[in-house]
Image 1 (cartoon, helix red, strand yellow):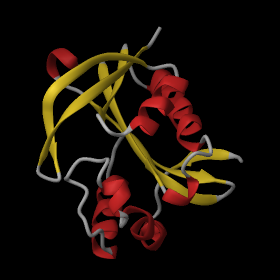
Image 2 (cartoon, helix red, strand yellow):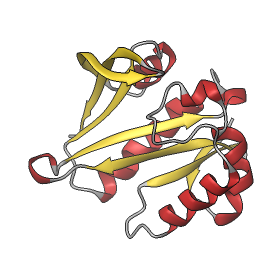
Image 3 (cartoon, one colour):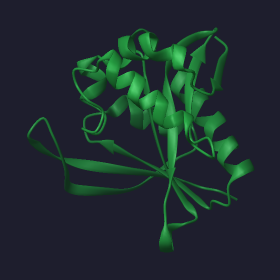
Length: 166
């Protein structure tokens, strides 16, 4: 399966809505991703990402079909050489190596275009699949932050996975 990252297009709204409006995805991401996820949410988000001066958010394609989203946030102040990544994959593409390949491509993009020395991802304690993807992508488990997050009104541990840029 050929995996590629591309810029988002306004015409992606319907496909993004279909993918992001999945409770199983929402259970593994931050609450700022609305649920249910509507076409209006997708249009608003696509308008926002199209305004980026530096591209930090990408559509993941698998064999030319939208398979998910991946991006990063550049940190500020004393953390200005650090980036946090986040991603989600459409449920029908789970377990096919797409997230692993997308992360590898994103890391290369970050290394080439930004002055970053540290890339990390935060994963909820029950998302073992995402932890496995990060490990396959060259990240290591740096820490477990006890009771650091609340999701679905349950306090949970947050696993911090890190890749140091050479």
